[in-house]
Image (cartoon, rainbow, N blue to C red):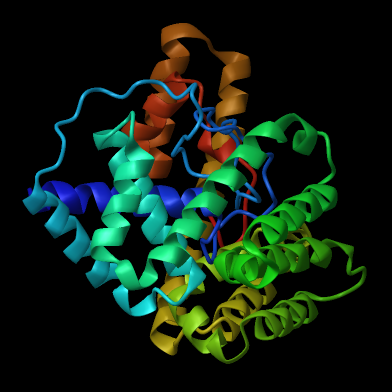
Length: 355
């Protein structure tokens, strides 16, 4: 029973992060996505930080009926209360913790009591969190109102520009939760948006070197995270490095460099974003391995194209097996399988420091 509670709450926490947009860092540029109504999946595009999407804990009458789940026993409810107190108890003065607890409970009680989940949830709060009942009950009301606003304004929001959509979502959050509470709930998202805006702005820095763009990026990180920057760099070195390297103009600049100059710049980027000497050496080795692989891959593709003009059918395939073995050794068979499926890895763009 305790294991089932743990699985449920962990799953709820993951969905909450996806829905409320509280993730600190993502590899992809943090553009605000169009808000989706509950139950409708976001289009299959590169993941971004949501700007107003809410987790799929539905409150409307149109919610599909879940599969019957046994009502929890008193023991199970006691275990649930203990688990939540252990997870959030010390931080329940913080709106971020309050809404996470509320959303965990919404998922639990909607599953267990689909017809009277709200009443059971409030009774649970009164029994197990009496000192926080008024605050948590108000957070539940605001959370439901916000979900309704998201659902009702979905079409309108999709028609706005990114900046207009952000403003509309921010105004709704401030109105429903209060500005101070909203800022604290979505603090990580606001930081993420600020960093993403800076990364996109780097493409407009005409004539600036990679070093100067990196300096601008680091300065903005300092402004956004302040005293927490050291901890952020320690936890998110890879994400930050990838996001900077994914900037189009940075890739263009790196591609225009000699191999030696590019190696120096990649090392400087990684060092400035907190990697130690041992990690820098490992990256140097990986870069060299990638360069050798791409060099072999481009030579292979050129030879492949020449053969394809001269041969066909089984004769062509036999020669390709031969040259793949010569260029790629143990990887030759998997590369052949990729090509049979229509994928040619060396036709992808080279992304310096990334592949």
